[in-house]
Length: 203
Image: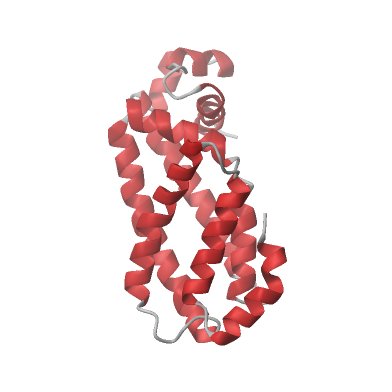
């Protein structure tokens, strides 16, 4: 692992564990036993480091999701199950704290990340919806661009609001979102299959 990769890995863990604001460049250098001069060879400031961490996480996430969806043995409903398990396995609450800090203390980095992710999610969702229509599991009359935009903009905001309430578990929120989404877009064939597979989806 290169020094740059070590900086990214260690700092990402520190930020998630202790908060973006609390962890200084000195803390990161001390953990890695490197000088600040060495750190600045790779990152001019903390904002650059945060942007690089987010960029790397986006790439990793999309590769994992692409691998899940590339499995030709799975139909689109099965992919929903796999995607859901991947999502819940991401220690969501800890990452929500990370993004809360990021938005509060480094808004420029936060909103640039949100902008990129919104486009990635929209494009990925459109592809996902078209696949479901082609397989016959989603309704043929779906307005795919509109539905993709709706899902990209509203599902995450809904999830965040429920987490703030602290009255619902992550599993319950995800189950509700998946159930509501699937029932709004499936065909008769898709609904029948979904009902058969529903227990597999529930977290």
